Length: 271
Ligand code: KIV
Image 1 (spheres, helix red, strand yellow):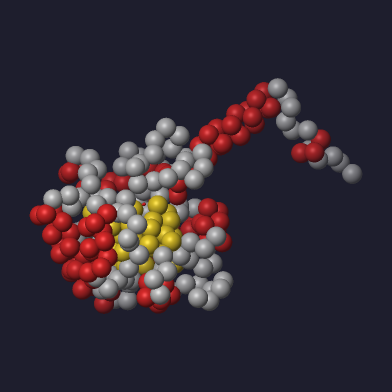
Image 2 (cartoon, rainbow, N blue to C red):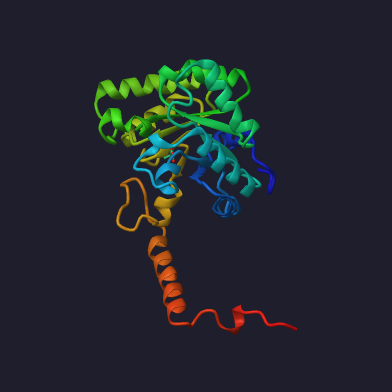
């Protein structure tokens, strides 16, 4: 793979065909995206998890198209190499086909993203197909669909029984046939994720879907340990950034109060 060159959908396909794991991560701002880009993340998703990680909402339902585009363009500005995917928020792709194209187009035209992600199975396959026909690359997303949290009454692992598993297999096939270039599998049993991964010819990217997926995605704030007292089962804390930030802010606040900051080192004198 070409070093330091912007990745394309074809590069993701090459990774997939050479059986190299695809590394995906969420990002919402330019500086964090720049760091993730520099360590070799292949796909940066500006997830609508933005609602909880950055905007302080209880779930993703409140995220608007404008907010999502705003953060997507920030991530695009921070990234040199990774593919940037905007996550179409609740009701931005369900109203009608023309509105879906217009909204999805904004991710490419206004925010500079490389594609969009849509939650949903075979019911949204016609929308995916229309976007792909218009030249808008699409990532699918099945399993737990956070935009259905109110309808479902919470987040529940999907595909645990035969009927649900069969429906998810049909969804995966429909999205592949509609032209999605990758498929996120969220919160499904390991063996079902393996079966789907083996049955379609586009990369699966798992979150809470086990080791057999072609790649993995995580919410950056989860793996950073930003939520101090909570960790979803699918995530691993690679650090305790929440605690670290708390201690840095606390040191700063104490030093201001005690007049230990600023010192001469942080002050300017006239010539
Ligand atoms: O919004 C998001 O961050 C996502 C990932 C969890 C896949 O959809």
